[in-house]
Amino acid sequence: MKLLVCVSFFVATLSFVAGDEPNLFDAFHRPKLNNSSESYKGVNNVSSSSAKHTTLDKAFLQRQDALLFTKVVGYPAVLLPGDGGNQLLAVLNRSEAAHIYCSKSADAFTLWLDLEELLPLAINCFTDNIRLIYDPKTKKSSSPDGVNITVPGFGGTESVEWIDPSHLPFGEYFVGLVNAMVERGYKRGVSIRGAPFDFRMAPNTENAYFSQLKTLIEETYTLNNQRKVVIITHSLGGLFGLYFLNHMEQSWKEKYVQAYAPIASPFAGAAKVMRLFASGDNLDEKVINPLVVRPAQRTYPSSAFLMPSDTYWSANEVLIITPKKNYTVSDFDEFFTDIQFETGKLLRNDTKDLVHDLVAPGVPVFHVHGKNMPTPERFIYDEIFQFPDDQPHVHYGAGDGTVNMRSLKSFLKWKNEQPQQVEEYEIDKGEHLSILQMPQLHQYLLQNVLIPH
Ligand SMILES: *[C@@H]1O[C@H](CO)[C@@H](O)[C@H](O)[C@H]1NC(C)=O
Ligand SMILES: *[C@@H]1O[C@H](CO)[C@@H](O)[C@H](O)[C@H]1NC(C)=O
Ligand SMILES: *[C@@H]1O[C@H](CO)[C@@H](O)[C@H](O)[C@H]1NC(C)=O
Ligand SMILES: *[C@@H]1O[C@H](CO)[C@@H](O)[C@H](O)[C@H]1NC(C)=O
Ligand SMILES: *[C@@H]1O[C@H](CO)[C@@H](O)[C@H](O)[C@H]1NC(C)=O
Ligand SMILES: *[C@@H]1O[C@H](CO)[C@@H](O)[C@H](O)[C@H]1NC(C)=O
Ligand SMILES: *[C@@H]1O[C@H](CO)[C@@H](O)[C@H](O)[C@H]1NC(C)=O
Image (cartoon, rainbow, N blue to C red; front, side, top):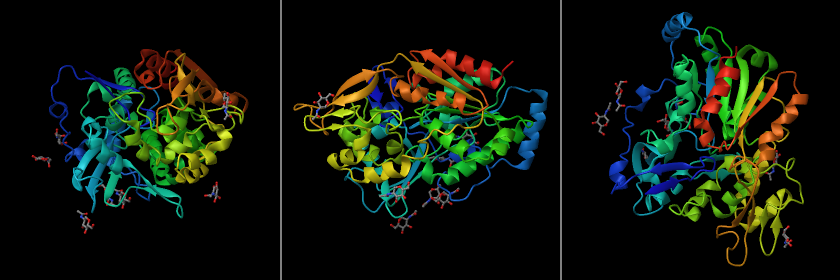
């Protein structure tokens, strides 16, 4: 039996082969998380309002320094994951649950990613716990009352190597790259650090995260004998990385940042997000009803942030075709009215300018991305597959399977906009998510960015 799971947008193909396992519940015991604070070195809460130094103490730093003097590897790296690319924990203390079978209270458990959460019925509870509520006054989104979601593992690599803490193959994420780096002398938590974040959010509300990221980079620099840090990102993480670099002083970047190495970065958004808003996105897998996950997916500011850019899509290029109306990048307000999600207008307005102009990051850039994968670029509804509640026909174009080629290539303009080098490395059939496990990617980053000759 093959079960493909996808609730979030960019975790495109988490495929899992269960063999003849009779009972999914037996196969996926919820991992024991009561002990988790001990297995992570670092702050595990991106929503805290003040920047917190990670928990590494001075003695630890000195001890690690001493160790590293004996074995100098390449430049240390910080990893920023994409949409759905790190674990989320939840604690529940709700006065009401969405359904009679949903728990109202629970100690810390893995909300993302745990297959049990996505099974029939359970998924209704999952959706109600992971959704956000927008406050138009503060322009911030938060969980429903009684739901506390935190991001574990900041500073370590565990929660970005494996999206599912039980390490089943379908939850593999940065693990391939991290293993390749460890083989070359890198150390988890010392010269490779994870910077997971709440991927439901857009950068405009995440100042606390960016302060933590700044501290993490400075600390990693110190910990590694004053070696500059490479910022490696996947997917949405590339936009968080760019936003961060755009907000740092040039002198800081020159001191601490060796390079920015985004992987599969949707610099100008992706057409696929239009379907997510309209009809929900389960990536064509029948196991999950897209309409069940749609109410949560629509509420993520990161979804609005990833809508196609009006710089790279023209106003006469149709993204969604319906019998009554067509929608282009100029029709987003009308689109949100027609799908009856008015909040979408506000979410888009809050996020559309965050990296809209793609300001050059001011550090050397190495973008690795795939090509030659059929990538959704237009969605067609008709009288039978009706807008917006049915799944549309898909028209495919160039890209990495998730991100359209024009968005992947939009960064090339930086070649004329910054003195530092701007490199592109394309991998044939480098699918958006599975590219992370491809040896070509690991080799390229090790040879050209991390341990250049
Ligand atoms: C974790 O919880 C289990 C039961 O849920 C308990 O047996 C175990 O002692 C706990 N471990 C710690 C370190 O608290
Ligand atoms: C709990 O933490 C201890 C000490 O860090 C570790 O040895 C043990 O393996 C952990 N147990 C689990 C279930 O994570
Ligand atoms: C986590 O975030 C909440 C605010 O959402 C804050 O009250 C709490 O102190 C934070 N915890 C840590 C460990 O930073
Ligand atoms: C749970 O919420 C109630 C109010 O709804 C509050 O009185 C109680 O202290 C909360 N419990 C915990 C453990 O936070
Ligand atoms: C959420 O959980 C974190 C970590 O357990 C805790 O520090 C924080 O105080 C909680 N926030 C709220 C609002 O209960
Ligand atoms: C929508 O676009 C398609 C393809 O460009 C075109 O054939 C159709 O007439 C348009 N429909 C409307 C209602 O404008
Ligand atoms: C749209 O965003 C701008 C800032 O980018 C803000 O000034 C304005 O109030 C927003 N409009 C609405 C309707 O929220």
